[in-house]
Length: 177
Image 1: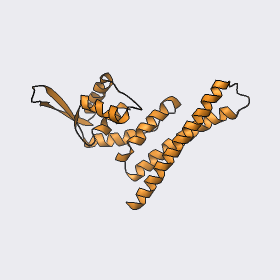
Image 2 (image 1 turned 90 degrees about the vertical axis):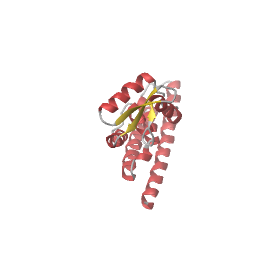
Image 3 (image 1 turned 60 degrees about the horizontal axis):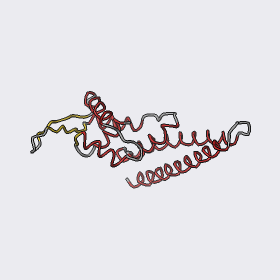
Image 4 (image 1 turned 120 degrees about the horizontal axis):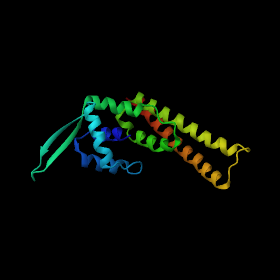
């Protein structure tokens, strides 16, 4: 996920590692807060894959700054990361799905349709899994489990509604374009 965030942040402008971290925090803090310890190796991996380039510039104060720029290969990698299958682990799903939805603007209409469908399908599966446990009278669920499961069903229902709204907007924009 860190590579996706880096590529998305530098899609429109070159940044230093520090500025990349700040942009990620500014835009994605509710979902993730990557450390420099995670950022630096991810930047190195992306540069080795040809997804970004770096250039060193000496500032007026005499400090060396390294700026990162996305390449054409990096744009394709960003799209690939956005469209790759989501984890079937519910613990990771919502935060990763939210990040991907927040980055969907860099996809074309058909790619967004595919992204939204994949996310909505998994969200519906996780919602149904929680609902099935709630409805199964033979499951040994206690009061606290039922409350948490009920909240999970509500959370996924709300999330699915958000994705459906994005699907409608995407369909409307596809007809206009």
